[in-house]
Amino acid sequence: MKKLLWTSIVVFLAGCGLQSPINNSAPISTNQENNISQENNIPNEPIITNPQKKGKVCIKNYCFDVDIAQTPQEREYGLMNRTSLPQLSGMLFTFEQEGIYTFWMKDTLIPLDMIWINSGLEITYIAEADPCTDDPCPVFNKEKTASYVLEINKWLSKKLWFREWYKVEIQQ
Image (cartoon, rainbow, N blue to C red):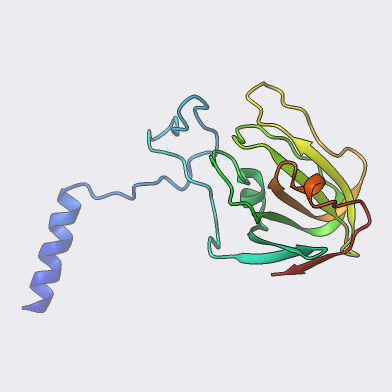
């Protein structure tokens, strides 16, 4: 009896054309005007492999609760399309090895400070960035090496007197 019930459910669902709501093979490209995937007309979501990955970054006596972007897809999406960011929050981009990493603000709706942090956990560069709808958008940091980049609300670095070579504590 139980087997017959499960078989009936499977046949019913197959007949209804049950499909996954998101096509995982769809490209990341989007219709920029309304953030709708061109291929399947559903709102785009970031490709996050571990959306619960949180951490804390402290500079001087100020600590920021951060989302951690550690995969290429998470780093590519970053803070795109977010309309706000709580005051002592941000996003920490982590990289497997120290290098020169450039960032831009394409489709990022909130102004940000970007803070590059080297493997010695020291600030190497700070940039103030405004939202960008142009194409191409300005690129930030063309010469300083880092293992991490922290994005926080714009002007907080100045307000809190952050400077290059300040030490940073990262808890992942």
